[in-house]
Amino acid sequence: MLQAGEWAYSETLKEHFMNPKNILQGENTDDFDGVGMEGNLQCGDQMMVVIKVDKEHDVITDCQWKTYGCASAIASTSVLSEMVKGRTLDAAFHISPKEVALELGGLPDHKIHCSVLGDKALRAAINNYYTRNGQEDKVKQEQVKVICQCMSITDHDIEDAVLEGARTYFELQERTKCGTVCGQCKDESEALLEKYKHIHFGA
Amino acid sequence: MADMKVYFDNNATTPLHPEVKKEMIAAMEMFGNPSSMHSYGREARANVEDARRKVAGFIGADEREIIFVGSGSEANNTVLSLFVCGTSQCIAGSKMRSTIITTKIEHPCVLETSECLAHRGVRVKYLDVDRYGKIDLDQLAGMLGDDVGLVSVMMANNEIGTLQDIDAISRMVHESGALMHTDAVQAIGKVPVDVRELGVDFLTISAHKIYGPKGVGALFVKKGIPYCPLIRGGHQELGRRAGTENTLGILGLGRAVEMRTLEMPEEEERLLHLKQTLRRGIEERIDDIYFNGHPTDSLASTLNVSFTGVEGEAILLYLDLEGIAVSTGSACASGSLDPSHVLLATGVDAELAHGSIRFSMGRESSMQEVEYVLDVLPPIIQRIRNMSTAYIKGGLHAASR
Image 1 (cartoon, rainbow over the protein chains, first blue to last red):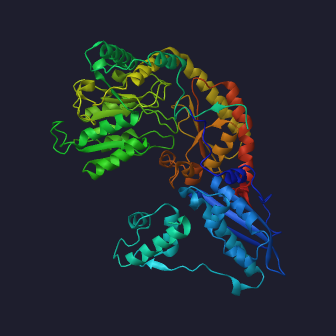
Image 2 (image 1 turned 45 degrees about the horizontal axis):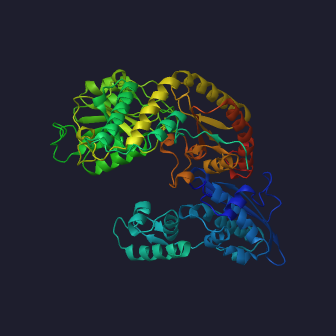
């Protein structure tokens, strides 16, 4: 008879969950150069990332965080905070959820969405730093494009749906209602569906 | 890693009772097909029928009213599916009464079957529950009518333990001419269940929630009630459930209910004391908590509590590292995106549903285990809250600290 299996998670993830790194102690974020927050408690995930920046070289010297969420959420913010230290703001801005998942030794498919808030919060913190330091020109807004005009569904909504498990056009429609009125956006939605499946799941 | 192991997830499943295990091991070589006429078959038949007598006796039914099935889910599927026969040939008059009433807090095997039936033309109405998980009898009265064929209300809820007044519901249902089903999977073996007193037409039982084996359950169908099998093609169970009987499982179920008869009466008070100790201890040691379920009309074994600013899967896994097994209503633990449908139905907000933990104790649970949980839980909640965004400056619960 087999013994109790390992957790659904990798050893690295388990380690970061058991001993999370760089948790922001206390409530005060005043000592930090950039603060970013994403998600909300109602959805079950919220993450805040704070950074200190070497202003001469635009390099992140410290990264701390708070997370409300499951084991994947806690571990992915923890691992992200380790990954960004020593990186330039520009390099850190481009860390993708896939890199975070890879660094964690992989995440189960249905847990990918728990980890995407960390890098979003990090980008918010970096933008916050730029704004505070009079470098508004460097603030990179995430481009949003409305794909389905009838239901006002954006490319971000489609990406979120993929992260939450949509794999087929039908499942995408079930989640977002995109293309359920005039249907003209079908080709573009399908192309994005494939793109995000590829980006996040390599499929 | 922790040395102490605490299993507080008895509503999910239970360990075999030592007596059940003993009896099943002793019977392990019984392999005959109960339908065979030779001695092998007769041995198996004798044991299946013996178990049937025990199960019938346990719930005050006649033996012929007990059908052995593969699970509680199968029993529930069978009952609901009675009412969708396209031709209405099996159950005369069912076409006239094609509405089913159930509740928003049923087990998924009832809710998802109901949804499926709705696609097949059945009208399904869902009863709301109050903040304690009780259905509103006035709302039920308003829904009942000559179009309603079946009402299905669970006796005890698996997540919050709330008990419904099945006897009162049955009376109303029968007055309107409909049939009454109760999913008693969580109630049976924990509170007295007598099908005549409850007045139900169908009742669902599962073995593995009462220290019996998995993969076996029983469905009570009152004598004279129209019936149509879900699994067809065999004469087993008087033609009501095809498939060679799970003889060992059935024997285990029989022994399990026998042991419940012996142990249940004293157990309830003991469990209630454990639950009260656990409840008081959590209340005293952890702030910002909410208890879910009915304060009195509830299973003695089940305590469901929500912690603000903390996600349930994280609690569950930190408790697991300390050797404590519980379950959570958080979406993350279930693989879905929504937290517990039961808690949401009681009006609990999504955040508190994500942060809910269910402790379900059983016959082996002890005061020592409760005390261990009370030692381990507060620092875990503290630790998770320390890393939670809910308690930062400007965070949702920052003001409460």
